[in-house]
Length: 356
Image (tube, rainbow, N blue to C red; front, side):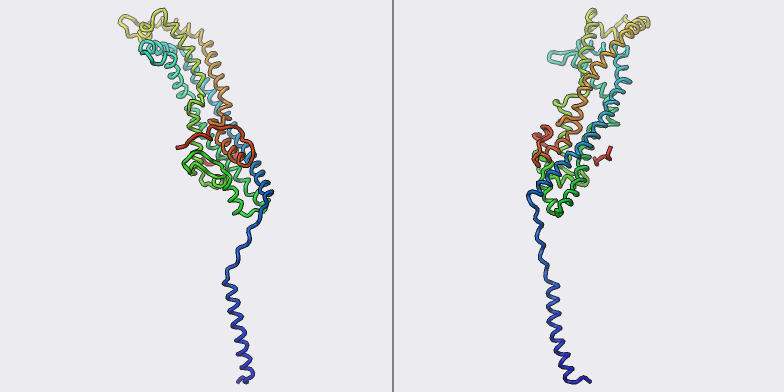
């Protein structure tokens, strides 16, 4: 049985322990003060901006290489189909007879104020060129898809370079994200969904669901299909004018109305004999090489002129999206834009490809 002295000691120890435990419990439950934000000097932010600017330029080069290679393949396919399909069709004997009939009909049926025979022939030949050349090639390589892919590729490459920049300068994630949010990447006209910061752009997942990105690609498509862009089939117009003049000249001695009847062969008592067809085909064959050469000169000259603008034009080329984003980002960081773009003034209403 404990003595009175021992009992008193135990009571005193308990009296000491209870306040200590209460104090410890209070310390454990007290909220810790938030750490002071890391101070980033203006000089450091300037260096960060210079690295972001350099990252944009670094991302532009591979995106341009990808788009250029792809459009070179597109152009090669256009040349091949023009040679294998359109030129043989256009210069064929029966096609020329058919075109003679069409020009004759255009002249006979034309009313005042309607397009000329050459203009209507131009429309018809452009339609044929699309059906025989441009549409089949676009099923393999679609320039509109190349625009979206090159733009997405630029965004992917730029996004990969940003985290290491923050790490090199020991910038906390929250401060770096806020800094990227202050850099405009897409600034089209209202609605507000047509605007996005650099942070929003590189973090969008999937990119094709981001309203501002979709609006940008749509605007490029609208400009690319507008009158300012010109057409990859522009050479057809000179072919149509030359052909119309030649066909009209061949009709002059007999008149357009009788020429229609001669080609169709439906006027009573008038039939095209096999012998006449043979003689006409032989005469046509002797002129065919010259016709093919004229066709190549007209078409290929126009295609070669369009090739560079189809790639580099800042408004409708396949790199228009890349140039727009680079101009916005680099311009906001103090660098001069690559080139002016009409997209800045236009009002609005695919996953990144693997490295080529």
